[in-house]
Amino acid sequence: MDEAEELEAQAEAVLDAIRAAVVRLVRDGGVSPQLVALAVARVAGELGASVAVADGLALERVLGELADFAREAGREHHGLVQQEVGLTDPAWSPRVSPPVLARRK
Image 1 (cartoon, rainbow, N blue to C red):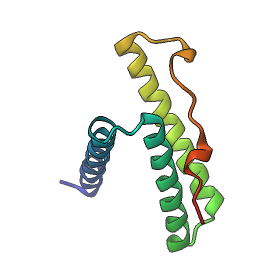
Image 2 (cartoon, one colour; image 1 turned 90 degrees about the vertical axis):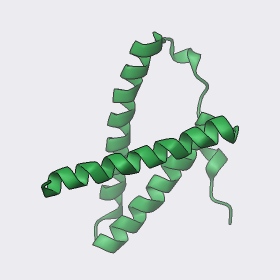
Image 3 (cartoon, rainbow, N blue to C red; image 1 turned 180 degrees about the horizontal axis):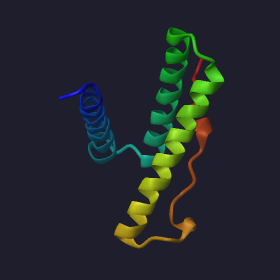
């Protein structure tokens, strides 16, 4: 297995672990998918900030790349979900409210 295949395998393992945690929170913990999405976005931003500091990168560049990546993944998954359940009405799902996860000081 070369380095690219090793990184891909690690990425898949991480995605599987995160997806399993999300499913547990929603199904077993009774947490709304919207709240989980906001929490995951917050953690991604915090991790991105840590990466920027650790690697000496510009914060806005790292956060911008994370946002682009999340947007593309969301669009891809949205298309798949629409195909599966045939939902095309944007009013079907509730709005997500970012202030719910504001860090408390």
